[in-house]
Length: 94
Image 1 (cartoon, one colour):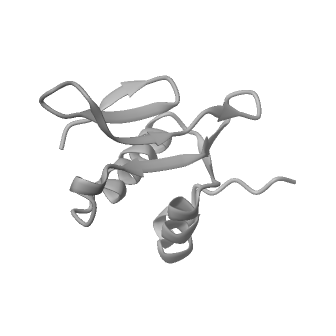
Image 2 (cartoon, rainbow, N blue to C red; image 1 turned 180 degrees about the vertical axis):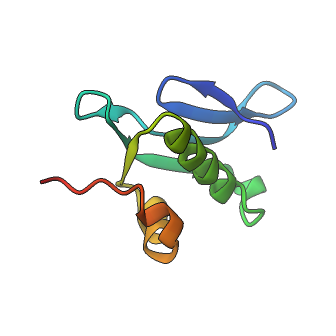
């Protein structure tokens, strides 16, 4: 699935132009950290791994842009807990 990127946001639109999947990751800490605040997938698309694709894309972008990540939403917290590769990018407030 191909996502559209805006500052602090990745999303997907269906053929009708409606947003049906989204992850929000605003910059914090002087733009050194992205806070993963929300992940949404419309009911008709759930169970297809789309939330995981969104999160993986944010992780890849964070690596490219040398950012740390702060998982706030429940989905991101659970994925970080289970994925050592993601944990390496996790920001811990000092």
